[in-house]
Length: 163
Image (cartoon, rainbow, N blue to C red; front, side, top):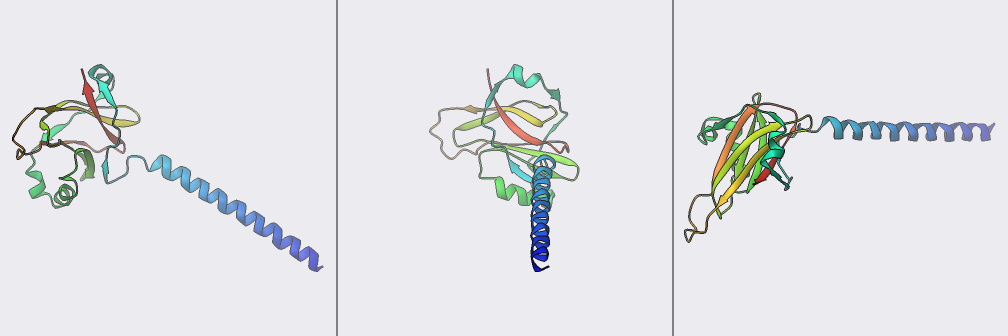
């Protein structure tokens, strides 16, 4: 009788272990597939370059270039700006039904050339390049551009365009 009880408890422990493992697997699958594009404040880590032809193959996204003064009027964007203002590259944030994209150059950048904003089923792509000039002026302001488009639950990738 005592052996039957031990066997029953062993089966219950195995069953519970299988259920727990299944729940963990489901959680991981949901997080990795549904979590894509839901990050509030992210930096694009895709460092690949594209030709302009590769960019225009994607669906067009309507966007506006936003004046940097928006950081003074929108409190949630002001705190985001403080976080990213010194970081080169592309950053994005969802706020009030829009996705904001900030592109910041480095000390060698004299301007940012924006090519286009496109999307496919996976992501939104911002095509740009940094215009670099040799200069002795090390105190010039590093270029900073902000774009806005209707919110999407997709990640945003900066694509440096090569001609």
